[in-house]
Length: 489
Image (cartoon, rainbow, N blue to C red; front, side, top):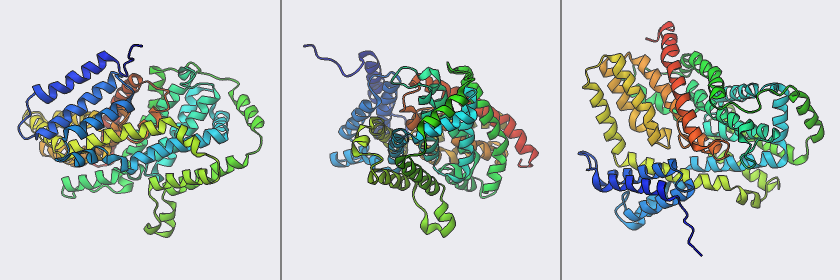
């Protein structure tokens, strides 16, 4: 019997050749260590393999971990090398992603997710785009009090979106994603970066952004919660309004209008009858997690009562296991969760060590120096810095790592070139969240929604780029004018 290959030969060969070119042919630039350059070669080869679909992304990640451990590019001894290759499996964000996917299974198994879906359809179900706006509005309402964008978009909104899609018989398994699921999955995701940009408390890296801006401007720009919210309000709301329309044009759902959807949803709710015990337990766990994610205990009783977002997810899953709502077999069968934990851990590991080995800092400094020597006016120069900063996120699997490595240097360069400090600070702050729209590994929410299978990788990247351009244009032109009216610059 002939051996069946576990990879696609052509895309695998392309990825290998690209990696070898960076490793052996392209000389290591001055100021970059050999290990940093070799890790970049592995990282780029991995991204090329993922884009080319050479293997399932989890399998590619296992190979990448093996190569990092074998080559020792991150450490000097074999044991230290494999420790660093596996280091991100203890990252709480990784587990928040995985546990969110597992919890979503409980909403589907108990029927509570379907019940919520039918309630949404009863309210907004006359048109598919109405459902999209319902999801985006829910994101916006939760954003100010939920500092984990992963918990918000992946743990709260995504299960509801999946239930709505399922109620229309739209699922990846049946090959019916195009009915409604693909469009709703994309709008579910792309609301997340927009709402993250609108409040300091909407995503965990935003306080870091505030701190770096203060340091880069010698505290001349100090963004309070209210200042940030007011500044981002108009452009953010406009992005929320336009995003579903843009995606509707790009990936129109086959089901556009459902005249009888309200009656259909009400009939389904009647069929479900009163809430069963497991639904009530699921709902109670859901509300408890929402309260903990929103930081209510800390708000009521003080900082010592704060609960970490990942710990909250584990608490919720533990309650579902203890009460029998979910069985351990349910958890083992949730393949998407385990797959996501593996590949996202590998990507974050490499992004972390590219930063730690100094390559990202080297690239940032050279980029800012190059733009500064072009002799451009501050408008053109700061725009180039903004674009370089935002679209460098294609090489990052962590917004925190990206912001830490590049924001301070790029912001300082822009202000030195002549950009108004408050204007450029707000633009860079917005870009620090808007950049999350680009890839399926850009932030914790993206792998949760991507792993549900409604959107292919090519569709995800195309939508991400187009939406990023629309959002950025709105913030540049509408945001810039809004901030001028407010007297910020």
